[in-house]
Length: 375
Image (tube, rainbow, N blue to C red; front, side, top):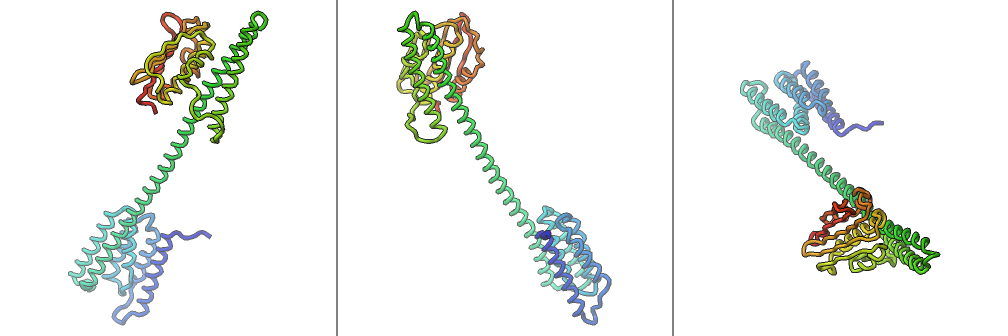
């Protein structure tokens, strides 16, 4: 069974009260007060339209006001039909038609005053003031409930917006974390597996002719694969959010520059200048990852075995330059995932990265990482 709405229930209660009171007034009538057709028609009309007060508040207000205005001067009984006018005034104000409610209330009181002056149905001053008070109270109550409802709606919407904002922030953070982990895996696994591939090829090539070189290559493969497993274990530990025996500080650092250059398998001419021993952790890690990725690209794509690495630290930023003079100068054209990851690392710190062929031949990567703006 469908339940009645609060508005409908209130309307039915008011209608039942008015009709019951009208019947009681009829039963207790005095000989000088005889009922007329208006005593029946006007209450029924006003009660009937009151059921539509939420859908058509202004129209209902007008019909009820006209019915009340016609009832008291010309009907034979004094029924409580005026209660319907108070409900209609309240509903109009509550539904946002405050001007119509005020205008109708003022017109009703003015008409009552004029009728009193003209001698139509005597209403004493105390009764007039009481009716005026009820008119003002009905309109004010409707305006207050509308304002309160609007406030609660706005507060609810703000709560929904705040919750939505938290969800968006959580999704953004999760996306950034996935991107960071993807960069870490690419930088670590891509570089180390590339080195293993290079060293394995060297070992196979020199296995018979130069066994000592093959032994060194296999030793490098062993060390690199061990480093790869350790790095992978560290990253997976972060994903599982458990405290394993993995180090919490980044394994890569410019303080291990010699090992980084040696692991590249290239003949690298290194030029270092400035203070490089007290860099912010984020800058230190980003610089190391950029250098390693740039050297890996030289090893993979340049067609040469030599490169130049320049690292210069100033009070404001850290400059990194990796150059080669190989014939594969157009590799990636600056659009590969490795170069994209380097750019993302630089821009995440507020810096910049440029990569492209050199006019004199070869390829160049230049990164600027701000020290003061590191987050």
